[in-house]
Image 1 (cartoon, rainbow, N blue to C red):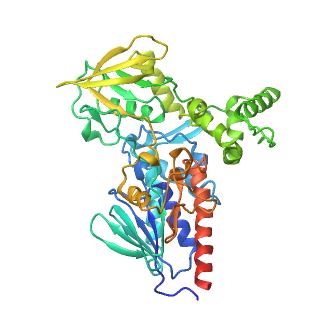
Image 2 (tube, rainbow, N blue to C red):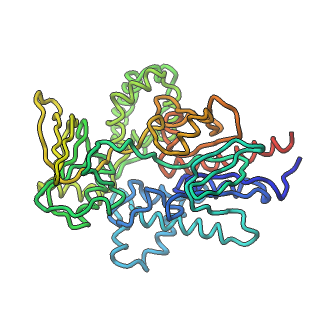
Image 3 (tube, rainbow, N blue to C red):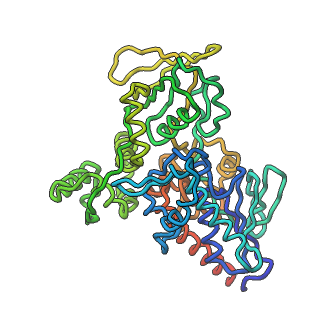
Length: 461
């Protein structure tokens, strides 16, 4: 049976980069009779947490040349930047920086780029097929033909299936303290005293954003950044192309064997390590899937922090700012772990054990910012995911990083109901490269094609 005008829509839940591109690609792949709902809980569509910041000092860690939203139009974002650069006010123009390693753009500018793409899609000629639902989706209740999508505001909408594209999940809220504030919600930080330190838990890319935000808010006092190993992201630099390694089954039998193979390849070519890491990108997911389960667990326990600082490098302008902070003594990066936090009226007394030290140390801080990164699906408090997990419609995947997802992007669970697919960071664990623009844009095309084919088969049955 062919599609009809009453065909139920496909819902895309989350309108950051993952959800926005899923919706746009679905409009291309699905018959015109099939509408798409794009659901977003925050005020802004096409931005999400990553691009919702208003600070033009928050630079994307990818070169602009790699950030087109469309796989078949690689210069799309670069051309957009070129068209818009001349008319930007000075406070926004600082968000475009040309460096020897390439041009880097601020995340607010990229959010504007995505918003324009979405606006163009919504206002394109013809009957509207994309409906924007500005509400938090709290449940997907199985029903005839798919699901009843329920929202916080009381909507109940029938849908044929849903794409979970909620981006990076929030962490567990640790460390727990009355003096903890949200990096992405400046109003929670409050007024800071210039002579008392602020503690940032985490030393990765989010920490860099936190430091930039604190300084732009006028805080001139000391900042302490703490993580288990005290590793900072490496910085982008010019690097020659390195060939994609031709890996065999023997190379992928263990992490130790793989490491020796890659080191030998790098030494033979005398390449910069950046070239070697970048050459792995097309085959990273193949490597991840091919490694034995025990070796993937070993990677997560021991090597992931080192991989992250080499793979997810910082933009040179952001790295320069952090280097100046450290050189001036205003930012201290430490390795250690928090043992406890005792809240007092105007400060939190943090007991930490520095890495390699026998005795703990006490640090009094006026504010604590969590920059530890991505939360795990198994620990999430997101109402929709919790209901879907509790109902058995989806389940955490390997190591609890993301959802259990098949090669067709279908989320797996103990129960069968309408189709639930996923895209982006919720696939972490099934895939490894699923959080960056180049990966998500390609996967959005594959996802949309797969959904269109699956629906066509169902209608023909």
